[in-house]
Image (cartoon, rainbow, N blue to C red; front, top):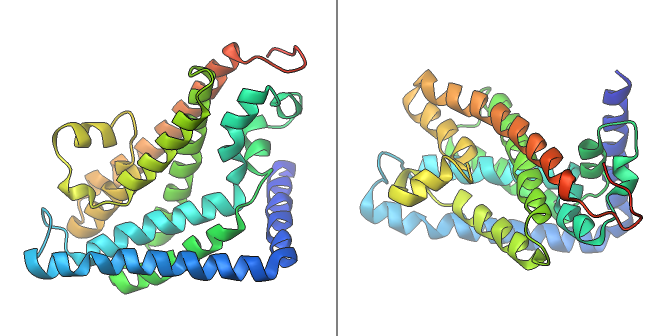
Length: 254
């Protein structure tokens, strides 16, 4: 119970910090929301000409972008500290989290908030509403999406344990993964399909939930739920494995 109170308190601190940057905050929110809107509209002529992508219409595409955008926004608003993981590994500055009695991954994730990601949250709500799929089932999909991106950031950030002196590579993996997640996954085949179902399992948030909404097949929902939980467990184990190769700036080793 104390852990839940701590998490809620940390989230509230991150929310209050937005008040100190009102002008910058609203400029970033407006610019990013426009970017998401233009990206979504850019696909409309394609669907008008070709109809669908392996059964996905423009509405399913909006559902996918909305789910990915909103989930990513919530993750970066409350758990953006995970994006600093590669830098902390590089500097050997993880000690202050590893020495705490509470979950170091959770504390690290709550240590930073990306205020501009409110635009992702707001844009995601509008995209989901425009898709026509804004209903009760999203109460399940959105937490799954947040869990996925939390796990994804932990997983990719932990690669820094094994890729020495290459922070730029980690950030490039971040950006390319988000790019793949925002494209219509129904059109993927061959290597890309294998990649999005294994090494970088973005299909857990940008394919299986949408297929469930489109077909009603419980198989897709099961894969999304079970796969999301398994990926989270894997990402935490991967982080713990990486700690064996962590070089602390103060000589501390876990």
